[in-house]
Length: 271
Length: 321
Image (cartoon, rainbow over all chains, first blue to last red; front, side, top):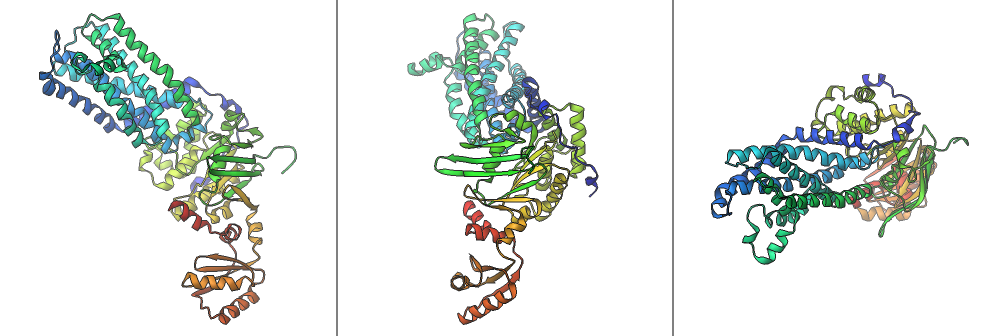
């Protein structure tokens, strides 16, 4: 056939040059690949945003009338909870995507290349961060359309969005562990939901914690979703309290510090 | 092999188990640079485990694996720079184009971008994918994916290539096409380790063949040597039922080396003519009426049956059922 006129170059003698991993460059290459994947499957992004939009409409117009929060309109109370809920459920795509890469043998290919061991995970979590940025901006627009009027200053609101994204990033690492442990995408999805549902709903995201029974309040007051929601709420409502922001940042840093090393070590050993 | 340079691939006494499952039970083999070594065996024989160890994806419980004289477990990064791997499942990203897939591998092996793209285009041309280079891989046929997978393993021009069942699941035409590409590749001097459960494939592509079954090497040699172990000719006698095949097998052992495969009895003999006559006489005396009788050259299938006592095909069915 005509293709046979092209001949393969002789074995490259300077191969050891290739053997040095590029921690930053490799991660960016993988992020590029994952962002292309998102762009080539826009329907996934659409479905990922439809669900939070429905939540906004449902809580704003269906449940909202029955939920009374003193001193603040419910939509202003709700939106920080929606932001956090959106990225929390979105973060399981990190695990699902990794499980898919494992299933399809792509991880084997990556692990047989002289690239940095951390790159597949760092690259994917970075790509998911970009994806979350897009989704959060979209949710801001939806919020403004249904009457969200944040009273915080612009820097405070930007800081709030930053916290939401930081939290999403930390959870990506948590779900990376799930994805690497279960090794098929359906299981990754199924395994993630029971972790997520109690965190999101038994929190200050949609209703004041004081309306819950006492035993549940203990949990709801001391879990990361509430911490981040409280911080974002205080930032967007204006009059941010340093302690709320500090608690949220501590959760984010803590989750990354614990989950990232576990995820990387799981990736190394994944077979 | 010459005494100065180490073999391109060397496995020494490899053991690997998961609990009670012993995938490798002391496997050793080696192949000089520029040759093709075929690892032949049914599913679950341990071929893929051996490849995963040699390509740094898995650590052996015991034993050493070397590629170009480098211990793969001690220096995995150096090893990865000199190997290419294409697996059973075409490990390409479906949501990228063919060219983007090759670019991805090129970037991850730290080849400059312009060089990566030049090589990517040459490989796409070479593997008859140039027309499809800007199409998303999810629109590709199975054969095209396999060719792209092979191309992806070649972007960094590795001197040692591992192909784990490269044609499994391909239709006959796709298989023949891929064989042609592989032959061209080894013609250019690449050292190749190829695993396969297709005896025809090993026969066609490999200089030397290692037969693996249940984690052990049970035979090795050239295709010709392995066939020679069976004598020159095979007499094939097929019956309508298992019962008659068994009865015939009990009698025909006198004629030559015997293998029973379902309703078929195969006898390997040195001299075809007289042995055929004798077979006919025995069957006649026992009132056994075969459905068909044939005299043919031995294939590697016969080797496998004789060496393991079961057919490669049979073993495959057992595993998949």
